[in-house]
Image: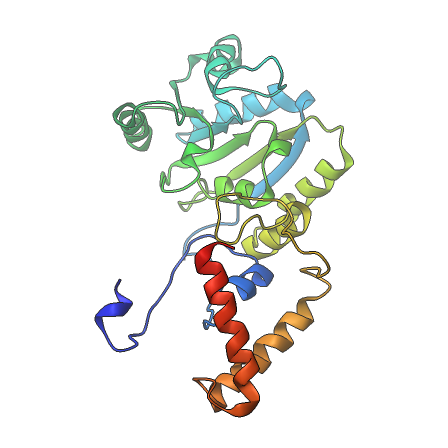
Length: 285
């Protein structure tokens, strides 16, 4: 709509999500891409650890100490309610479990996506105002939450999250000048999980993490709603054949520079093929 208001106006597209470079080339190959990968001044690198469930009591003690020193903490669960078919922590039951731990004396609240907007807003505002010590949540706090005083995040069943999502969640801490920590709790029984967690503990480079996530889980639908899964490619491989895509992009740029409207005879078949693709896409064929 905005681009229709002028004669080819300049358009700036921004996202806080670290899109994998390979996927960005496919989605936005016709754009000039700039990447801001530096941290804001005054912030420290988040210390990330991956441990199994045998460390749970020690983690609780660490969280308690951080709260004692004036900080706040997030605990992330993959589910809202308990499910007999899925062995994973849930927000509602987890809040009750903490009553039997060292954290029982702390001010605890929980939030999830099934709550009414007004109820969620009150809980999040109370946490931001320091009225709550520990916030138990689903991924509803993944974006848009800024509480500089929160310095600890514990992610339960971390193996159930994609790497890019874990990186987004981790970004909820480390937003102030104090040292922050992210603890990824897993069952420790899966070699692939161990490899994935090793990526999270070894780097805070969102682009490297999202690139690894892309290789492991696939990019999903480029313009659809499916968030992960390998693309429907019959022969091509997104990674080993990336050089072909780059060569094609370079060739397309050269053609557009010399014949923007594809009016030259040597580009006639190309124009016809592009028009056919546009018609096919519009008709949903």
